[in-house]
Image (cartoon, rainbow over all chains, first blue to last red; front, side):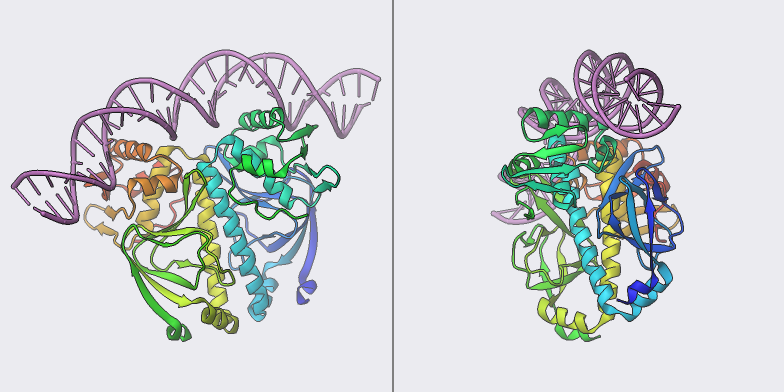
Length: 216
Length: 216
DNA sequence: TCTGCATTTTGATCTGTGTCAAGGTGGGGA
DNA sequence: TCCCCACCTTGACACAGATCAAAATGCAGA
């Protein structure tokens, strides 16, 4: 593909802010490995994460030159970047790329709208369960333990990052994680390794009406 | 434009649900006059509005055939519809349309992300002020009273619809409207007519860090 | 003009989550 | 190996907004 000619790679460490809101954006990019967040910060410091980027997700908007959000690596991260100018030129010449980008953007819009329901109407427990379900669906490192039907995930987020995504405080996140563990919905080894013995149970806890198409 | 050949109009009354989540969608459409909402409903009835559609906004996703949300007219509404099949065919042949649609979708995504911040981190008062600011920016019926610099808007939403959009109860919406009136941020004549004597003051109340480009 | 009902406002109280404050815990560096 | 410090958990209490309840408003239809 012609894109190969204008791409290059950059890597970042966990915790690093790749892009500050208001920065000039000289590239668009997609995640190769790792996880990043988009976040918005109010003047008084209140922070809301408005996007979770997993491998294959796209960042940056053709035709805009300043970043509207902070982009933060929450794990070590490898990005595939395209300088914006050549990318835009290529896009103008290649309808297929614009169409693919439209599809991806519509998917992101659906995900954002799902998240609006979560932030507006779900309880803290439902929010946590929903986040775990989303990570389980998207995290490349997920493994199904075949015999037991258990699912093991590595949370790519600190408790604080979870709180910022869920519109909660980190104390509430911690308490609800403990409660889900106490109630047998999840098992914890260390702080980041989560075992889900029964995915349907998790979805019930998340308050979702559909199963959302878990792979495997 | 070729689109003219395949379009037709439909009108709906305030309160009518145009499309139920799960319905087969035989058309895509854009709003001509009036206001509609997209909403998601949980099994137990909790409702979250996930989109506000003003004139010129687009509904429907090429390439998908069931509606993911309820679409409800909150005022009398005129829609300009395109049967989906011909629209898709036209889009495949006309890169310009896909590009325009991409731009509109990216704008909607930005708006949704702004809304995530509102739902996750703003107080009830800030939420109300933000909604009033959004309506003021988009409502076609807005009039600047030139001498005083006052802004008059007609709320296209009931208190309940406001609550569903803001992730609040209707009682809280009502109380905060009263509080904003008491504090001189807004003036109310009837329930729907709102005068904003000082738009900057409203934006401060909304907790936004930018003025968001008020026209006029 | 009056009536009736949906919508809105206001009041009293409850509760989930935030806030403030201590402790735990565990993994990386000396 | 041990220590340190960032990260996490837990506890006590406060408060914004929800819930339950009742009264007021205002518009559509007679």
